[in-house]
Image (tube, rainbow, N blue to C red):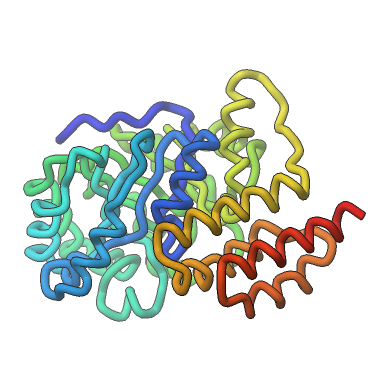
Length: 322
C-alpha cells in the first residue's frame, strides 16, 4: 500500500462528469480546495479506442498548484489493471476507482455503483489496480445498490484488505440516486471500522454542513460535489473557518465576475463551440437565486459565442445593480 497524503479535516472537490474539468478544478483550487478529483476515465475506452485516448489527454491535464487524483472506472479486472499501469503519473496524488456512479449508461455495463452487486469481482478489480498502480489507490462508493442490499461495511473492509489507501462513502444507495438524505451515520460506522481514512460525501452544501459531518461521523475529510457547483467560494469559506473566521458574503458582482472568468478559461481550454455550450449549465449554477436569473438563463442558452455571453452577463449585472 502506498502512503496517501490527505490532510485531516480537509475539504475535497468531488469528481463530477461534465463539471470537474481542469478549468473548474483550477478555480476551486485557487479558492482553497485542498484536493480535487478528475472526471472519470473509462479504462476500457482508454485502452481500446483512439478517440478515448484523445479525450483522456484533456481529462488528465492539471494545474501546477493543484493536488489532483485521477478517477477511473470499469468492472473488468484486467482492463482496470492495465489502465492503472498506464495512467499513473506523478502529477496525481492518487488513483481513484469509481464504485459509486449511479448513471444508467455506466451501471448498465456493470460499472460504477453496479460493482457493489458483485463484491467478489470488485475485489478482483481492486487487487489488479493496486498491483499495477504506482500511486495510492482510493475508492469512491455508495452504501449499496438499494436498501435491501446495503453492503458498504463489507465493501469498505474488502477495499482495505486489497491495499486501498482510503475510501470515500457517498452515503446513499444507487437506487436513491441523489434524492432523499445521505445517511451520515453510515459514514461514522465505516470510519469506526476501518484503519484507513474514510472520506464523507453527501448533502454538504456549506461550511456548517462540512463541520457537522466531521463532528458527527469522525471521518478523516469531507468531499463536496453538487454543493460546489457554481460555488467555488465554499472552499474559501472553509479555509477561513479553519482560521476561526466567518464566511464572506458573495456579491452578485463576484458571481458574475467568476462566471466571466470561468467562461473565458473554458473557451480558451476547449474552444468557442464546446466551451460556450458547456458553460451554459455553469451559468445557471452561478446565478441561481439571484433576481432575474431565470430570464438570463434563457438568453445564455441561445448564446453562440463567448462575446455574446460576456454581453449578456454585463447587461444582467447592470440590471441587478440598478
